[in-house]
Length: 244
Image 1 (tube, rainbow, N blue to C red):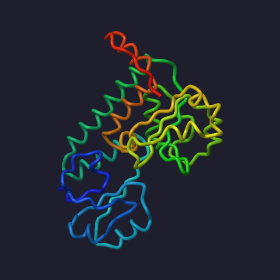
Image 2 (image 1 turned 180 degrees about the vertical axis):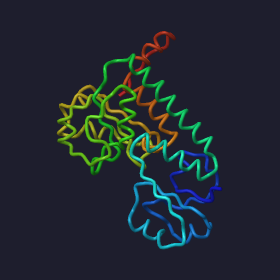
Image 3 (image 1 turned 45 degrees about the vertical axis):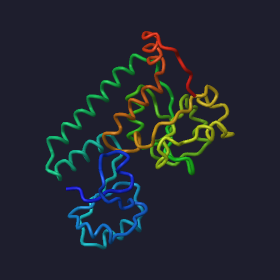
């Protein structure tokens, strides 16, 4: 059923050798898509107006998706499952995600009190992680201290005094650079900077509105509750190593 994907899809799904045709921001050519003769083109934010306009000029069915919350993510999975004739599988996936998030939330309640967290999706300009990431932070027992999915200033982040900073820069994989954060002049008195609690989580695990969020939530939980992981390691008699 699937005849083509974006260049990012192979990072989060087993798309094999399907044609990779750019994305909703930088599309190589509308003609490349038309050659595949799709009956439906599905796009997700962020969009570039010119790219979407070119698609809408064509005799295509175009489904625009813009999830914001975990509820939106679940609704989109159910929608796509229905379109693909896999409604039962889609519902099973949603229930699996909900069960695993609930398990992480229960585990997090047994950890240290909730931490103030700033998750960043882009550094220039600074943009906080999407609203569903703020929900995952709450699942993991923390609190997102700036509005989610919005442009924020360095002064605004400093005033929020996050105790943990998580970098998940879009299209950067796990290559975000904590050193650049430690060097921000306005943030030198921020608790996360003073205590060396700036961490990187791979972009795909927090910015993909779908099943990868399960791995993203588990990664967040480990960062926010290292004391639980230390306890497990000590019980196994393994040596500890510091992580910054």
